[in-house]
Length: 297
Image 1 (cartoon, rainbow, N blue to C red):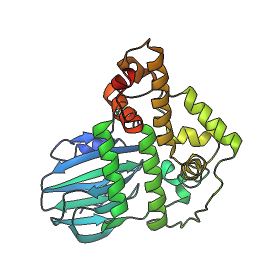
Image 2 (cartoon, rainbow, N blue to C red):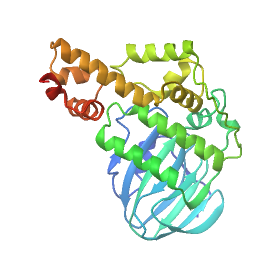
Image 3 (cartoon, helix red, strand yellow):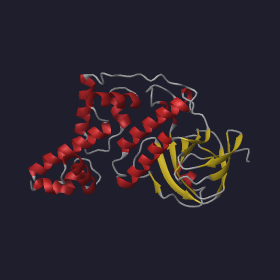
């Protein structure tokens, strides 16, 4: 095992240590403070690498088959028996080296420490919220979030920022609760946002529907952490910010269809959907018909 880990400061550079290129990445999706790579790799020896700019979460997706890996992290060595649904956590600035004995599939998530720290407290710094290293352990919730992020990249990579940031906020809260030196006190806000703050956010959303909105920018409007903003927004309207944005885009698309001046493809772009098929999917899901059939009703 090497004494001096290789320091890597660019997400793309980490992927160069693997024999095969990733099947899927988030690099073109404009996600803020988080990256994803979906990999299928053979047995390999991975050198000791440290990433000061992000925490790494490995989420294994290869099913029930067990793969053995000799892993060293933070000066400790362990033989891991890794199955699908397990995760490995490597905090920023911690060296991680592995010798993996078989082919496996996994999602590699990178979360920037300031995004992680501010998930609960907008004023928190990375130094205040220390993520702990973790060898292979089953984590159904983290697995579900990882798969949801992978799937949104397959179905709708453009315009997935708000959804991705919402999921990463939930993931960060879970990791802080269970794998951090700081155990937060999570408060409940049954009354939701004040009328003024709710109006402030919804007006901003409606004025920027054509843009790739992010959870952090919405939370900053009302000076709240992403976690509490999401929670209180849902208390107020009965849906997440992402669900509200989708609903408003469909409603705006319906208005444009009534006007009859734009094609369906033009409407999709104007209201912020990635493409016509994305509009078709959500329009039918919410209204029961496609935009084209809606016009002939």
